Length: 579
Image (cartoon, rainbow, N blue to C red; front, side):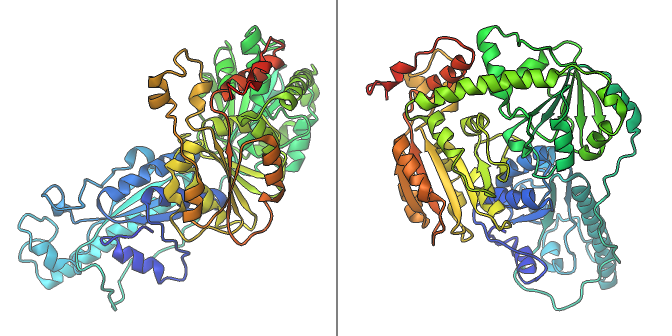
């Protein structure tokens, strides 16, 4: 809940009801992401409540993220009475359906006519209560209002439970706003809301038969919560020599023979010949949510006659322009069924094993390169990736941060999340803080400088645990824009308006909000700091890693050049004038 006057009835109602766990988050944009972090971890709806006017607009970034990430969020915005809109009163906008483009339900309650009777009747233009209405007429009108509002709420809640995407309920309130009634409000009889069951009614036999006819098969797993696949299914996939299994860092899926760094497999071909030395897939089965790797998207979009199947209950995105089958079924049910029939071994190619061997060869070349490079974003990530304690809840910010993370293997006990629904830089701190509220494990945010400073109001609450940790990669600008090929780098326009070069650090933010602060500028000092950074403490901690801005992009490109067995000029990075 964010402070306000018009939403005072909602605030008081929730705050005194022991059924609810409540949080006060001042900034609505931060509050939306804080709530999203809780809903992301629990899978259950979380309500955000704000006052009238521009407040509700600040929820839109988190609502859009929830919409595209299939996260259940309930927005309840307080509003003025309908006849108060567009007459010149303050804190009044057209709130009804203002979030409609990114919600699965948007409705406005009818205003209470008994409580607000005097306020309503003062306006000669209102159309809520007929002029001269008797007491019995107003009572009857109130009963109709209660029935309408109940049915609206019931439909909205059923939808958010079924589809796990955000809804918006707009609630007009008349003054006075702070008094509570001592009368029992008569509501229609209700039945407990039930989460709709997700069972498959599909005939899987034909699908499995078709799947087993393909000789070159890929399974690509995008963003998902831990435990999406059972260990039995993971083991079955790992033992299938005919199938290539590619996982993203945000998939939280780890298998013995899975390719965990997609760009390390695909990028070298783009640099070298643009023609992978393995047979193109005939079918790609996607599981989970958004795919981060642009390289895999580009490659698959250019394959003619590719079949793309999507498995799962959430939205099936036509990411590769070739979506042919949507299998609304529990992924474990379908995959387990594949390996329970004899036909899955009918066609043997060792295709999956061949691609895996090429990937392992590439990673070996890349690992040797990492040992030699100077301090940089890439070097910092190589050190961080092996330092995170087991069972930590890790959140990554967007842009270059999550893309660096994709290059490394993380401990399977770690749960990894990133706001990849919209992939914006806002909200990364707030969502990590929200997620930390309902886990017994420590939470770590790994973030870039622009993302952290952009969401600095996320610090503005009293719910930061002492085991909360932040690793800030500060390369003094939007490093992702240096990675994107362009001839305009290091020009005044690029530096100021695209990369957004700055000289900020996080020292004073850390001091203001009670964080222990550490700063490092070399591999040696980073290794030394990581030895104590995760240890138990009385206060949360922020480790700032300052890297040289102008070499990060060149080192990353040469990482892929080495894998592609092309010439690289690593030695030039050791010049102090460049660093």
